[in-house]
Length: 288
Image: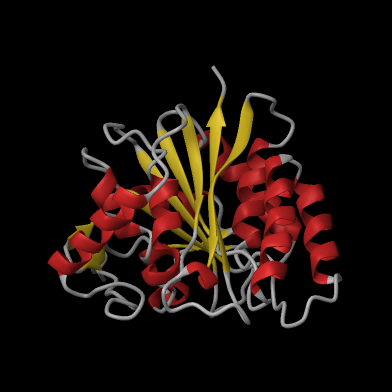
């Protein structure tokens, strides 16, 4: 007997992005027209922000612009760090599809169930961490707009704050980091310092990611946090997701991270310079 399908309804449509399909399409189209053009080939992963589009939409479009629009992926993994739940391991959504204003984002349900069944010590199929989580949802309209061929997504919300667990997650996912698949890593950077401080902190964090050294990233995050920057809540809200990707690429010289675009919320029309959030688009390529 088949399990009941429970599709995930939008959590932040009308808040982070337009709930009207046509308005959303026009907005996404505008962001891509203003984004950094495609600069890289052999893209294996992108790091993209997940804030309200008025603040981070251009940077997200710059990240997704690096993807080959005609690519035919077997799986698209979306990794996000939970904003609402703390739990060991990660939650794979495999109960149904993602409902979006423009239609359905197909979830690779069978593959997700296989992940959970094969590695129950790491992965759960508990849908609760996905219900209100915005950091995967906001990536989907960019993916939908960019890719011309059909695809299925594997939505994964990481609940741990332990680097060792991120390493275990990476060990399971590493075989899928290939030309057949795409990884989308969802994260914003600094939260709530002033405009100039954000640029300094975010630059240091980006350089740590470009080093392809997970321990260096952890060290730089700690140093950033100890700089004494007023109002700095976090340097990288999705650090566990970025760390998981870096554990997949570490010690492999064929992988390279590259900066694509940077802005912070102070650059937006509604932004202020006193308390900002930083956004990077970063791409992972594999040299042939």
